[in-house]
Every structure is written in C-alpha cells, then in structure tokens.
Length: 138
Image 1 (cartoon, rainbow, N blue to C red):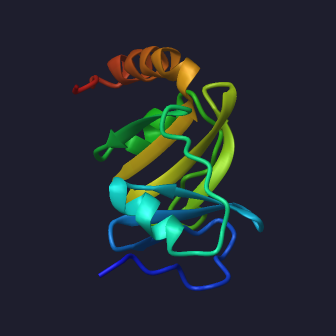
Image 2 (image 1 turned 60 degrees about the vertical axis):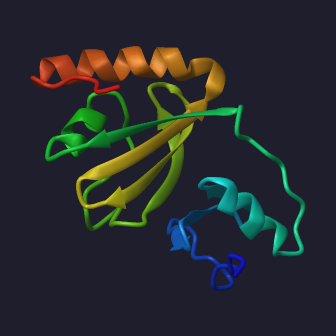
C-alpha cells in the first residue's frame, strides 16, 4: 500500500502526519515532507516536482517539559499551545538563521536549519540547555 496524499489544501501553519510522513506547508506552492523512505514514495504518489533536501537540512528535537523554555532562549517563534499546537508548523528565525519549527508532540519540538549550520545549532542549544540544567542526548 502506498502513502496517500494529504487533505487538500493544507492549512498554512498546520502540518499533517500521514502514514509516518509529515506534510509541512511552507508556501501555498511548496510543501516540506519529513520522514524516511516513505516520504519519497508519498511525494512520488502526487503530481508534483520533487526536490530532495536530505543533505540540505539539519534537524534537532527538543524534548521534555522544558522544551518551550529552551527554545525561547534562542528563538522568537511563539510556541505557546494556543499559537503552535501539536502539528503546528512555523517557518522563521531559529538561532538567528532561517529555519522551520514543527511541534510533533505536546512536549516535543523539531527544529530545522540549513545543514551547514547544524553544528552551530547544536552548540546554541547545548549552551541554552546547560543554563536550564539539561543537555544534549546523542
């Protein structure tokens, strides 16, 4: 059974998770798909142009009851539940660089930036987490 497409049209600011793939609307004409091999299969099941960004983005998950507070230390994207509920997707400035934020669960945020800035993002998050009594888990 192949992956099915998301409900059309996708709502701006709201990602849809279908069969293990996150469909994240960036603009009305662009959607970022996040997932394993099934994401490529899902994209191929639609009549769209596919651009593989696998090596173009770095991703980091902030997990736990202090995820929102940790994010606030280096990012101005509003992640209060009424603004960014579960499945909320926000493009914006992450650690002073263009990026994306997806709330995958109640206490889990996925942040994405350009791959060249992955190491920088790791350092920024680790430094902010240390001040909150936390730290990275590899």
